[in-house]
Length: 485
Image 1 (cartoon, rainbow, N blue to C red):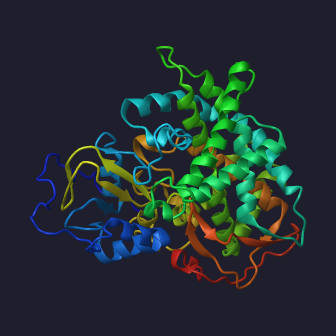
Image 2 (image 1 turned 135 degrees about the horizontal axis):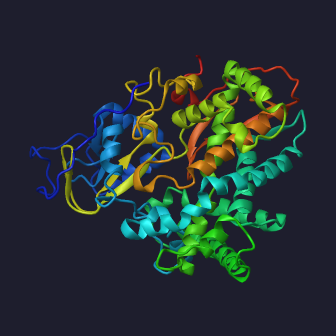
């Protein structure tokens, strides 16, 4: 595995706005009259990965939806990733710009977390949140993780056919509400699960791009009502933490108690946004789901992993110290995140006029980068469509060549938490049961907040003694992974 190339220095400020450097159109498709960029946006939302692959294949490492007026730029590969992500004051994070929430609404407050903040405000919030995701905290959360997984697995029986996508979502949500919010009552957890699932579905609707208005009956209108219910739940939890300072050690309690060096605390509005951000578990559930699929389709890797788990754990749940012994499990997770990253596309917006490659950009231009495309570049990863966990024994790629948790100032603050969570879940599930996808199952991709299998992941539960077996599956999963190897 090679690392990324030399550091990129592609940006210069104050260009002649609205024209390419050479005074000609840059690479990219011509836009549709009247409909403009939204027509391209709708096409991308139908199949984002297919759209990204087409752009990269057709136009190379950088292109625009409409080269005559480049307002949406796609830049692929480690050098462009570095250019975009290493300059947070020039390329700012504003993920909800194209579908804004009404000012002062509950939805706007839920969206006001760390990923929507920039500059000194972002640095202040990140510093206040750091304690809740320190290694010491993650170690303390492991007992809760183990309890949540054991409770879920107690309901599984050999012979059942289960949707593992739903199961992984439920497990990670259970872990999330207990470690992030300190909740224990099952009815509270279920109520929050239903609300969050509803909001994620509403937020992922392509109609949000077509009708970005809160008119009665639109997805945005429904999102506002659901967001109000979630906000009320969060506010109640914030008040509970304030009434019992120092009693609980969950992430929200840490946020409520956090103070800057000047003694400044987060406001209630700040806490609402950060609480919702740290709670959303869609990406972890996605990663676990895809990992189980990849292991099912690669029985030789699964067999080797089971041997490692048996030797290191002997059927027990892992401790934090045990995780260092599970080197193949670490490689399996890294390789799954490389091939099928839950966050497969990111975006930034230009804070000032600047140049990016052949394009002169106006302030406010959307610039997209893709983990999915980068992770498939053959000069970075040999035989890139092959699932090969052993490749990680050769060393680490450069930060901007492998970025399942992002990179730069806005890299995921919960990366260590998520990695430990995935290792605990997989170690416990795989030691307890043998799981098998039925022959002929169709696995297609779909985007919600994260990349997930359309229709879920049906798997048959078998006893630990059941032989490892592999059945062929169909669907566009074969475009994403070479399952013949």
